[in-house]
Length: 97
Image (cartoon, rainbow, N blue to C red; front, side, top):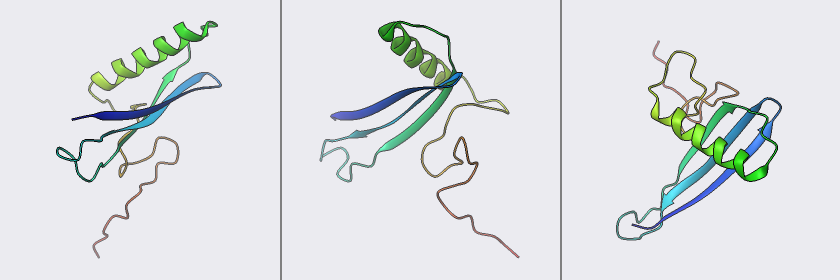
C-alpha cells in the first residue's frame, strides 16, 4: 500500500473547514485508486500563529472523527452521503410509490 492525500484547511469566519481526499496508489492493493473524500468543520480558536493554527485544526478534526456521531454532527461524510452545507446527496435515492 502507498497512500497519497491532499488536505485543505480553511479559516471561514468562526469555523475551520478541513477537507481533502486520500487514496491507495498501489496497483496491487487498489487497482482502481478510489479516493476517500472527507470534510470536517470545527469551531475556530483565534490562534494567530500559522503552524499552531494548522496543527490545532488538524488535531481537532482527528478528535471529531474519533467521536461517535450525535444528532447534530458537524463532521462531513464520505462522498455519496449528505453534504455538510446543502444537505443534498450525490446519489439519487430510489422512491417507492
